[in-house]
Image 1 (cartoon, one colour):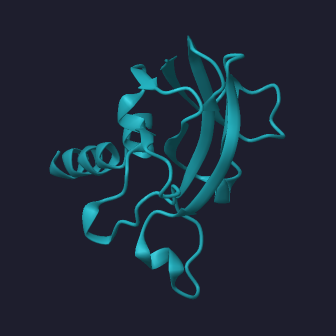
Image 2: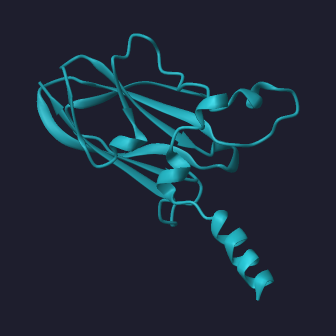
Image 3: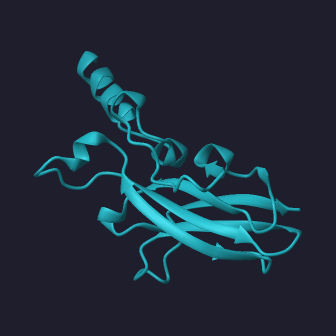
Amino acid sequence: MMRAAILALALLSGCTSSEEKAAAPAAENAVPAPTPDDVQVRITAAQNGQTVDVTVNQRFAIELVGVPTAGYLWQPAQVPAFITRAGEASGNTIREQSQPGYAGGNHWEVLMFAATAPGTGEIVIEQRRPWETNEPAADTFRVTIRAH
C-alpha cells in the first residue's frame, strides 16, 4: 500500500498545468526575457485574459516561455487591424542553458507589437508546431489591447 501511495505522489508531482509551464523560471538561476530596453509595456503569462492599455505608436512586448527545441512556437493567431508586428526576440530562461553541452529546455519567446491607431481588440497567440496544421494548439494566450 505504501508503494502505491509513493508512486501516486511521484506521478502527481510530475504534472504541471499549462500556466505553470508558461510561467517565468525560478528566480535563483533565472535569466530575464530578452525584451529590448526601449519597450516600456511588457505583458507576461500572468496577464493572460486581461486588458492592457498602450499608447498609439508605443511598442509593447508579450513575453512567453515556450519549448522551441521541441518545435512548439508561439505565433499570433489573431491580431486586430490597428496593431502591427514590431519585432521579436528569444533567449535562455536559465543561466545553465549557456553552458556547453546543455540541450533542450524552455526558452523565452518575446513577440513585439505596436498600435498604429486608437482601438480595442484581442491578440490571440497560440503555441503549436508549425507543421502540425490540423492539430489543436498546445496552449493559447489572450490579451485585450486598449490603445489610446
